[in-house]
Length: 200
Image (cartoon, rainbow, N blue to C red; front, side, top):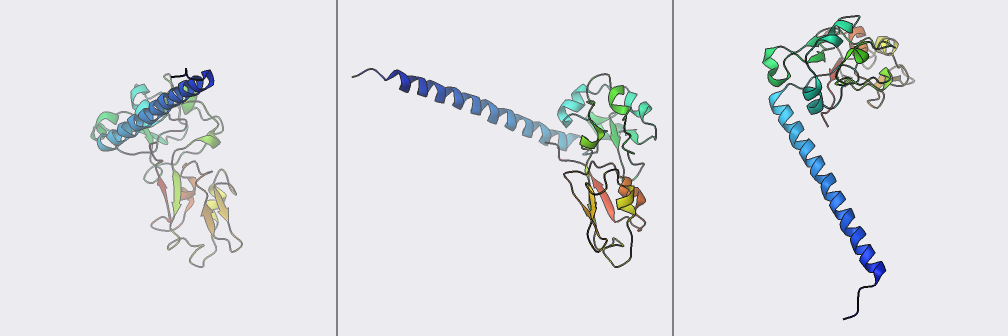
């Protein structure tokens, strides 16, 4: 039987290495998915402060030191209580029931973190969640002029856009989930809800 062509052997070797690499990638994705599913079962899904790393890594890195809570100039960062189980004592933002993040340009909460659970990033790139607009109750969508959410947004015309009829739209690609639009919304109940981001 003739020996394999050296180019065929190299090709097979590269193919095998590629297969092993892809299998490792798939295993890592599966492990992350399983970990995030476990996090969903044992910890509440909440909005984390700006710069938060992925949830599982965040829970392991956060020492519950309260440094970010103390650094927040408006008191928007809270701590989960004992009902949060494994996440008890970790920081979160609840723009639906408490204060919104005001998207400080210097974002002192991020550099205050001593462990890297919060990474220092541009506040415009933060992912605390995103705003969902209820068109059935929004004044602008039901015939009354209102642009309060658009004016309150730190990134108007990027995160909240307004059409030619003055009706707002949320672009989730630019919305950081700060909640300033919700705080400004005049309807009762509010026509905007801040939804925490997906965990993976």
